[in-house]
Length: 130
Image (cartoon, rainbow, N blue to C red; front, side):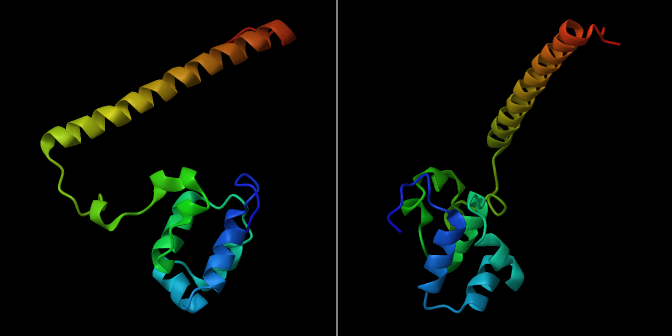
């Protein structure tokens, strides 16, 4: 497994770690919360989502950030399970404002792209926006 980090297939790495585990594949898949055939789909994906890899990592008790340091933000931590934590009112407001800000940024970005697209249509095709 000594390929460059950019050429590592996440699915291949998952497969190698699962094969070397003392747990059976069925146990790993069940602990990760997937169905049996899904594992074979996952190991074929070079760009397997980090969230999926993190679920397998939790089931395998394996830290995939050794192979993929950039996935550190996606690790599922037991002590920070957001579904079970009670947030204070101030924390809720802060979280709401964060997502509102992201939404507004994306809306503005979409509007800029839409304006550029319409301008291109006008320039290249002589079409006017309706």
